[in-house]
Amino acid sequence: MKLLLSILLFSSASFLFAQEEAVKSSELILGEWQLDSISANEKTFKPKEAVYLIRINRSSIKYNTSRNECTVKVDIAEDSISYRGAPNCTRVAENSFGQMLRYFGAYEIVDSSDLIIRNEYGVSYLRRK
Image 1 (tube, rainbow, N blue to C red):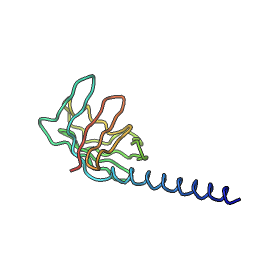
Image 2 (image 1 turned 90 degrees about the vertical axis):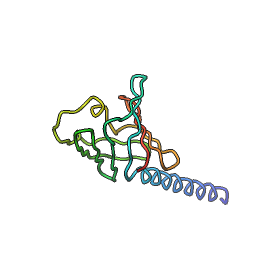
Image 3 (image 1 turned 45 degrees about the vertical axis):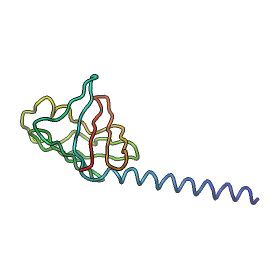
Image 4 (image 1 turned 90 degrees about the horizontal axis):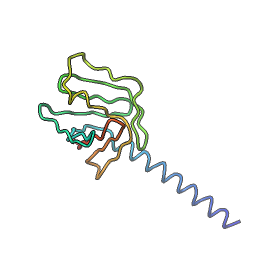
């Protein structure tokens, strides 16, 4: 009986700790980030003509391209970002770098200061602003 109780207590504690870690991960992503580079098709692209900022909150992402401001509703899980619809952007013609910006997919936060987002289009490298 004591063994069963010990196992139940340990399992409950492990489950609660895992939930707390998930909340921490999805909380760490919140805030303002700056794009450093994008890797796609075995090439690395760095912004040259503009500073690309992204602001992440619990339900949306706001970001700038070289000529547009965009907002998109999102779902943020412990390790991924999903768009809930298409980004709503101002309708100014975009350069090729601005067209590469896609902030959804699997993400990883390194040392609380670097954000890496991976999706089928490439990998975006950002740092906390």
